[in-house]
Amino acid sequence: MLASLTAIVLGLAVLIWSADRFIYGAAALSRNLGVSPLLIGLTIVGFGTSAPELLVSAFAAAQGNPGLAIGNAVGSNIANIALILGITALVAPLAVGSRILRREMPLLLLVMVFAGVLLLDGHLGRLDGALLLLGLAVVLAWVIHDGLRGRKDPADPMEAEFDAEIPKEVPTRLALIWLVLGLLALLISARVLVWGAVNVAETLGVSDLIIGLTIIAIGTSLPELAASVVSARHGEPDIAIGNVIGSNMFNLLGVMAFPGLIYPAAVPGEVLTRDYPVMFGLTLLLLAMAFGLRGRMGRVGRPGGLLLVACFVGYLVWLGYSM
Image (cartoon, rainbow, N blue to C red; front, top):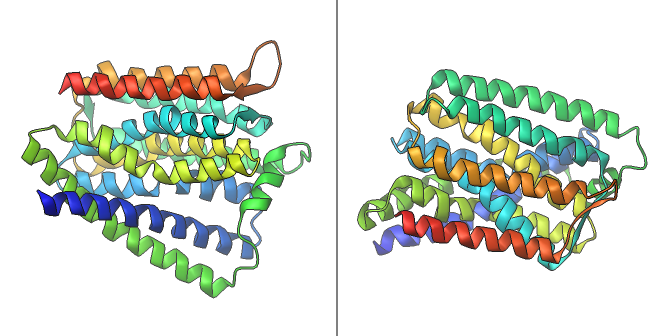
């Protein structure tokens, strides 16, 4: 038990560090290759923060633990909105000024409906996984197209925010070293984390799904927390929210695809009756805050942040009673 807990703690610590180094190397390399900061932010940074979830779910599915993999994807989305954005808004209120971001939010809702329809039959199979990956390709193409269009709009604040955050003047060789080192560390730490989590679940008699929804989901969402809080403190609220939106879309289309492709299995009933509705409801709440009222700029202030965190605590209590 002690070895398993140690594996979880060390695995999460290395996972967070390696995700940061992987994104740093990929972003710096892309900038050196002439990719615009806006496109780097919308793709590499926005989706790259989900690299931990992707690898953890892949290893969990390969080990025959699809419940942990599915719980990780759905639980991370719940944690991203309720916990990550909630804490970030408590640190610094988030005003939504980017038109690009306002176009991405309804897209996230569309992605949730699409993924939900595939899960409705209670089975996540290879065809479902393939359709989710196809959906991811379509979303990536749309985001890149929207990013190229957004570059022509100098009034959109996301361009300047990403330009300030994307690493500058990093030698290509150093960027490649961080990229490869970050990826290798991600692979090793994800494998160690899954091993520890499965052992703890078996020892305590807790389902893989619950472990995926709680310990793993919160742990793999920590890179989003770090990125969002730093962005908010730097006066870049659109990046803070954009990271969560990009990550949530990737979790549903990319991370969720791997259990279906690697280990087709039944979807736990609780996911459809409890967890997915909670995720959907929190997303609607975020959209209501972000779009504002009567045409005014949307804002996730401290009261909204407190409400989101309270929702997350309530959800954890619900999970506790469900065990």
